[in-house]
Amino acid sequence: MTHRISTPMLYQQSISTLQSRQADLSKLQQQLATGKKLLTAKDDPVGAGSAVALDRALSELGQFGANADTVRHRLGLQENALAQAGEIMGRVSERAIQANGGTLSDGDRHSIAIEVRSLRTALLDVANTPDGTGRYLFGGSRDANPPFARGPAGVAYGGDQTRRSVEVAPQIFVQDTMPGSEAFMRARTGDGRVDAGADSGNSGTGVVSGFGLIDSGAWQGDAYRISFAADGAFAVEDADGNPVAGGTHSPGEAIEFHGLRLVVDGAPAEGDAFTIGPAAPRSVFETLDGLLAALTMDPTTEAQRTAQQNALQSAMRNVATAQEHLIDVRAEGGAGLSMIEQADDLRAAHGLTIETTLSGLRDLDYAEAISRFELEMVALEAAQL
Image (cartoon, rainbow, N blue to C red; front, top):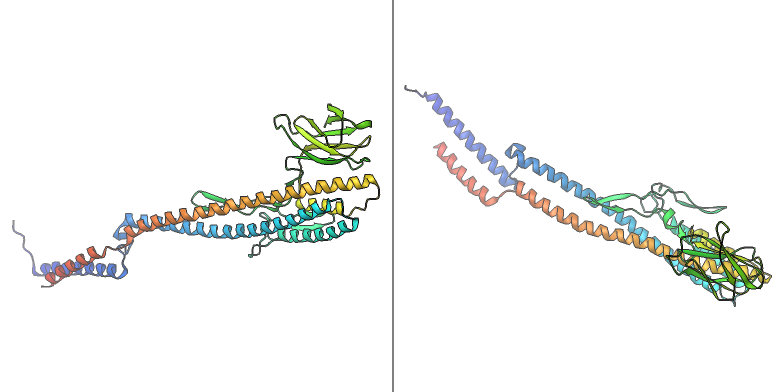
């Protein structure tokens, strides 16, 4: 069977060949001009889809980086604020130790109280540090207003206990700044584990000069009361009034029971009592208020002077423990900053891998493209002839 090819058909085939060659050449010219081998999704549907997914991953890394910058800024401000708070408490500690000396007069202690009052105001300003964006560092999630305010009953906290968790790299989260309830309102008293003190109604000269935990296995976290009778006899009772231990007290001699140790100097009078038990949480501001109350006492009797000394001793210990608490909070913030730096390195590594893969999908191989371009030029010229 014979097939006849008409002249119009020959011309149409020639035109189609020329148009196809010109289209291929035009595409190569666009690729060479842009440096991209994927000009439209139809050039490589699978590769284009992979490129879109990788673009999305790069965008997420950029958002993680922005998150990290925000948290880094706030944690850096927290570091500075807590460093200032530590310096303030260090000065308060120095003045508390000085006030506890036996050579100062009531006027000297009143002068120290003036400075401590000023330091308390400075600490309140630090606790209300803004972050420069209209928010406050230590307010938790309620950080639109200053979180701390002074009232008739002392400094009150108006924020909440929420601590944001921010993703700074894939599946890596960093805690935002510490809420003020944890940073300033829950410092422990005493030595941080155990606290001891004298009853306010004591009439003798007994002063708590030392206490602590000597056997953690023997102490179950209970509180005890040591009551004194005539001739230094004492009895130790638990919180339910059950007798635990007893003996005769000698000034400066340690009373030890159930893993605890208490040292009382001086001579407690009959009916005097002391307590020892787990340290309770107390705000840093309440600790400063206790120190101020002790400094501004004007004792006239031996019992009043003993009460002041006990109050000063207790305030001195509480100030030192509060200072350590601020150091712990500062260290936790430093750990967050360190984690952000690690996340920066991880994001950089991920970003480099993604960009390398994207380059393989999108970027043009100029040597191969130029060779193809020259080949297409030759083919087009041949078709034109």
